Image 1 (tube, rainbow, N blue to C red):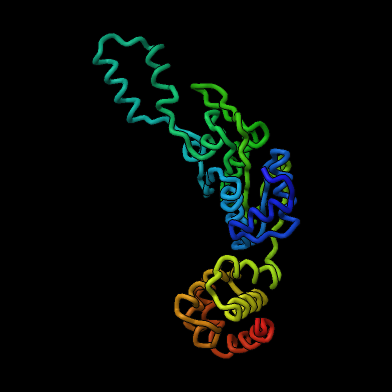
Image 2 (tube, one colour):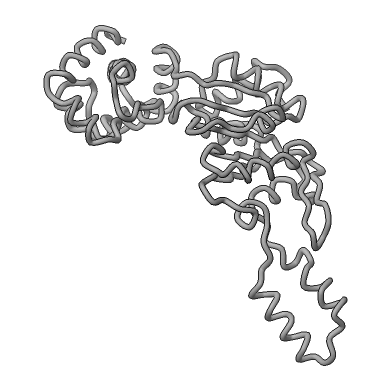
Amino acid sequence: MPASISELQQRLADQRYVTDRGLAVSLFIALRLGRPLFLEGEAGVGKTSLAAAIAAALETDLIRLQCYEGLDISHAVYEWDYPRQLLELRLLEAGGSVDRAAAHKALYSEAFLLKRPLLQAIDPARTRPAVLLIDEIDRADEEFEGYLLELLAEFQVTIPEIGTVRATERPLVILTSNRTREVHDALKRRCLYQWLEYPSFEKELAIVRARVPEASAQLAAHVTALSQELRSQELYKTPGVSETIDWVAALVALGHERLDTQGVDETLGVVLKAREDVDAMRGNRVTELLARAVARGGGA
């Protein structure tokens, strides 16, 4: 456990995750109080990668639950291994008379329990707290949100055949949302909250330099500035920080030391993920944005 906010920031920096003090404070409080942290913001601003970075920084396991429409308990919490249960029942029957109560107890035991991410995170057998990432909770159904309330309040789940399973080592829970819909207030009240903005030029450049250290200083600065310019345009899908990192890495792979119109034109599909946006940015428009980006990025 980091002793201070500064130490937490340094541990994250060691994992090549650049964070400002506001986010570091929220994360530090979540660690100290054992409260879930709800991260909301546009896609690509670093919500998911924060969970991976803090798990590595704490030298613990990252358990990820990717949310989607129709997500249910059997995929999120647990289900029974029915094929193995059936085989075990056949073996019991082959061995002679079957005591129904004993068979039920044997079949509905932990040996036949398939633990999904939520149950893995609060497993009493864990010897150290995990980091549980509940990613894109806004994509799940509202009914699933309701199921999470017991977990986030008590760090326990109830399995009818076994009883209540309660964590002995509480996980650090990080929930993310791209705000495709509003998440219910009852869920948010159980969490600390942090909104993640698109970073400033200086912060994004620091992120790029940390994640793609082999890029020249000039290339990193100019690509970062151009990504910032693109975000000021009316686009169908605004590029995030992850796209900036990918863009710099792609240009490095192609042998670019500096950014020019040809390099931008050849790699627009790395940063823009909609045909309409790629078409709109080609030609004179991207040349104008590149000139502004080079002026902004300077000689870096």
